[in-house]
Image (spheres, rainbow, N blue to C red):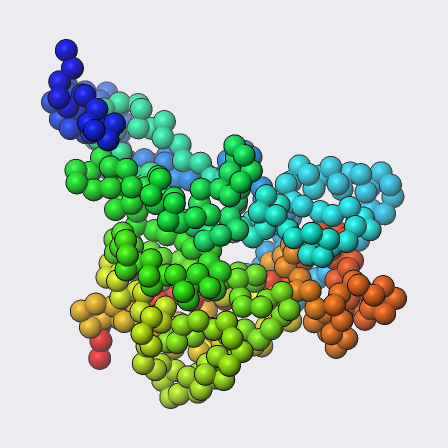
Length: 408
Ligand SMILES: [Zn+2]
């Protein structure tokens, strides 16, 4: 006869840990993991490794990886592919195997022929990110002792990624995938009870990465953490502002962001930003509702990381902006605040994908690219060539890290 513990509750769940408390547990003393031959610290590392996320065999990957650099040095222009008909076919087949979208020769670039689709990798496929990822949980099934030691590892040590729109599509029907809508993902997946009594799964999450369009950062983040603050348990938050997340990136408009003011959609915010930038400390009062206030609701944060990404032609503009960002101080509770401590930004670069080109030529001609063959400038011509090979502009990434410090 089933006991109360074994019978599913009204939510359809029962707590296996509670069940195992009264069960016989084999101490597994014949195993070197438990008989003292392997120290417990090493055993924990092995178990953590066993449940570390890894790319699914179906995952798309940006290749070749040689285009990723640990600097902002100018990247060489990729060579022209084999021009023979056979070479072209080989190239197309290879690109399909690699899962990277490459337009047919002579086809209009993706940015103009049709809006790039999430299934193509827009805008989540990156040199440092792919989907789908998998977590192996076979370790938890090996024995009761191991289970009791590892049951919360898959959640507590996996970085949860959210795309806040334009994420990878669902496998079943190609519609918006589950990680594209953070509210829905949390409600549908992470609000179930966890194996820690009284806690929901979302309460066990310690690390989150947000691939975030600027409107979401400015208009949603603060409201989000105030309304359902499981973010309060986060120890590591990473915000990645990609090339295509900035306001009006399609027309290559001026980069603008301001954690003290909030929404920077309109052009007049550029002068406000420059005014705040030019203050002595680079810090001003936070307006009500400014996104920089969001971190004050995350008192357990150990690191806040922000990636600032743009294309090669906006290098100087972003450099100025990041120099300011490194001065930003975000208030936490208890008088502490987040600071970069004067540490410089880490610099990476990679060869982006075709849809990372803006619609407007970045050179002097200012034409809408590719629309007027024969009138294009050398830069337009180079861009067209890159797109035909499946490449985008060189993208530069500045990564800044804030850590909590005591107030003055
Ligand atoms: Zn041009």
